[in-house]
Length: 86
Image (cartoon, rainbow, N blue to C red; front, side, top):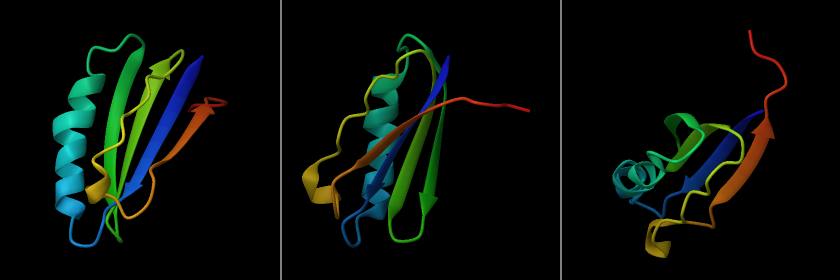
C-alpha cells in the first residue's frame, strides 16, 4: 500500500525563505533513510506556504514541526492512500 503524507506550513510574515531552508536543512535530512520512504517533493506557494509531500510503502514517518517563530499558524498534515496511478 502506498501512502502519500502531506505536510503544509505557512511562514510568519517575512520568514518564508527561512521556513523553506528549515524544510531542506532539517526536515528532509531527518526523513532520509527512513524505512519505506519512496520519494519526497517540496513545493512553495504564495503566502509563504511550504508543502512537503512524501510517498511511503507502508506507514509514514511524521515530519517534525519547525520552530514556532517561523510559523503563522500550526502545521497541517494529511495522509492519503493511493487509489489509482497511470
